[in-house]
Length: 114
Image (tube, rainbow, N blue to C red; front, top):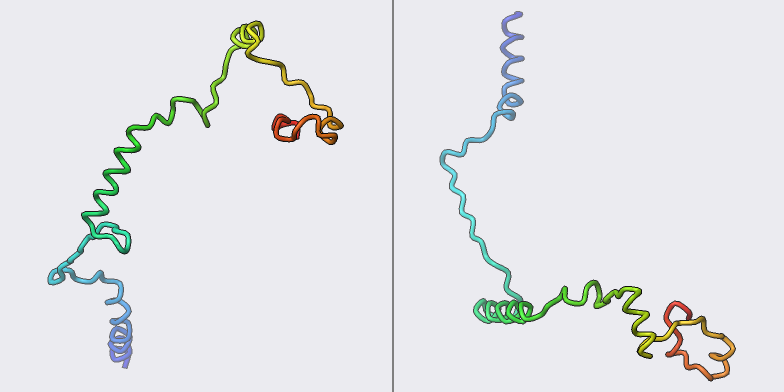
């Protein structure tokens, strides 16, 4: 009787044990076809020409020439020299009453004083 219980228990656990064994890959072949991205409405040759043209246009540009967002910092000495030549002026606070009266246009008010 005890032997038959052990046999039944082994037969009951056999499917669970076979689930832990990795599947065999001996007969399976993997076929992966890789396709590049092509926008809809374009053929691959036209898309390659477009990418090449955009890359050539990008090489012609010098994005880092003017620093971040085109801002070029200058030294205090160059600012003072520009003041003496009359090329620069100080940005004094704008009187809001002059803006309201129209004496100073809103477009002429510095950004940080609006």
